[in-house]
Length: 308
Ligand code: NAD
Image (cartoon, rainbow, N blue to C red):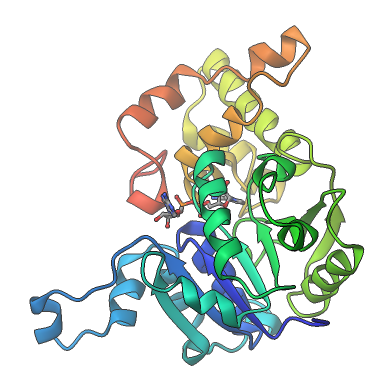
């Protein structure tokens, strides 16, 4: 296989659906799978809903696809083709993976669940198809350790950033077993078709950008508590007032999802040497309290901001 003509994204949450949307807008026929049941109830059938309508309405991430019908921020997202999308369920539709050139995993940040999924993917994928993980920082080597040699040669990390249609950075994390041809195919596709800037990262916890970013976020939260600032004041000081209207701290955390951010912090646990770093990666009480109350951000409509 020399180029990517079709793809599958597994996980239709914040990232998976938005990655699928980017593929669709690049004209790539895309399968989107999740554990979300997509059977219609009698009431939904009577209302004339299709399975695709149901998924588009139910999943936060798929709203990104809807949004793109009217919101076209760059030539790369200037058209939109839902007819290239096939939606399926992980229980019933894994055989759809046999058809595609590149499978991107974007399910929850949990190493065991990802490993279980890759075992199944390895059974259904066509030989030589590329498989990648969108993990924020789990070891790529760990995820593939018991899988077939063909899988390992075609497996790597491809870390898209949120939201993928705006953020150009993509970290690519090959392992020693990843075929260099695979790295080239994905890098070329990401740069030429998706408009990314590719940076090769080592398989270290949280790779590069999240290693820096998570430390910075935690530091800001801790400084905010010390200085008794409000969420809004911090967002002004780290956003519009310094010319970064879209990247204020708490707006970004609401977009990322506090559950995912928590897992990114967990990726560092037990892997640090310096006392200062260990101390910094303690979860602040404010975030613990929000997690308990399921204030996870935009995906649930309630986070640092209640109307996000
Ligand atoms: P999310 O919570 O929005 O979506 C996770 C998806 O995983 C959901 O659709 C859920 O149905 C599915 N899922 C849950 N349990 C599952 C299981 N047992 N088997 C299969 N699927 C299951 O999460 P997200 O923010 O889209 O993150 C997905 C991946 O992308 C994670 O690895 C995360 O670290 C990474 N990531 C997230 C961001 C971000 O800003 N949110 C950015 C870059 C990378």
